[in-house]
Length: 150
Image (cartoon, rainbow, N blue to C red; front, top):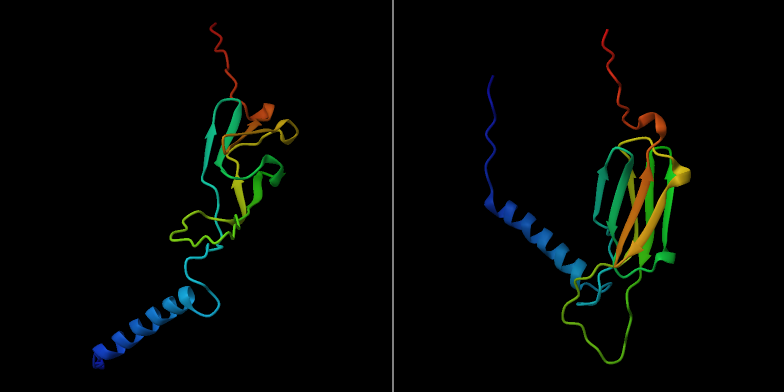
């Protein structure tokens, strides 16, 4: 079985790299963008999910948002957190030199590791951290079984 050799052309690779760099440059500085404006991109809050004998706890870092702008819902075994962090627009002759904070709508869905009682879920929001406490259903809580001796 004969294999055909293909001649390597280094300029073809350089040309492809150049097109990718041009596209990236156009995306950032092109006519639809102005340099150093806040980028509006999708972001999701960082979360921790922990489980103890009687509950599942979710902690989400959502700084800069008011509690009334956060929505929590439960469907089956999936908990969803939604909200929007609005960009601060102050145009008093300021020109930004660096913008690193993220803005925009977010939606984060978490499949819970155990069945929980949706009617007893509680949420608190303090110092930019949303804490959701989900009590487990009675049938999934660990139960100690006594061993009888004869």
